[in-house]
Image (cartoon, rainbow, N blue to C red; front, side, top):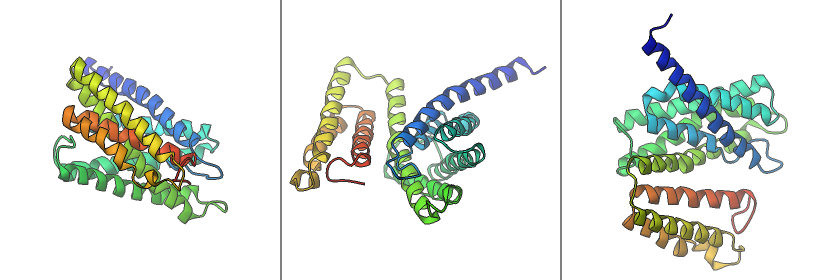
Length: 263
């Protein structure tokens, strides 16, 4: 029999892993659903951002639960997407290794709790995301490569999809956690929500314009003011959330071929 403390710790780990697995599965399934035809690999992988964001928030103590959830949720989503069990396990192993590599690089460069406090931390975050995705893409592309999808094509699709997934989704989770830890006042919340709505609408309007419109080449004219308002008037978490949500809107428009940026 395990001591009560050990048994509770393992029960908490498996419970957390089960919850994260469901979230990771939904994010991975969304990445597969957003896959444009005739592409055989996802062009936007938000699941990587989910795993990395949770690991940044919870720290090293959540590494086992996150790795377990990436394997379970990733295998389930990949099988659901039409791939066999063996390849799904291998792909999920690459995704799990990506998360481990990211956290290892980030912890070495930052050397403490991560919070997007300064340029050094932001640059370290971007470098860790790029290097971890590059390492995982080497294995993932080899697994996905076939007569229909050459290795180089699979690698060129995997790398940006995972980097963008981390850069867009992980900061959003971090921002939500900061708002949970430091709840804003009602007035600040109302002001921030209004700014977020304006920012999203401005992003959708600017990037959905036809290619001949000058606005699509100068979209910052209408997207930068609400973002600056959030940064100046509200908690930093709201500005981070606004940038992530606005980026997600642009990604969706690009995937579906709406506006100037077409796939």
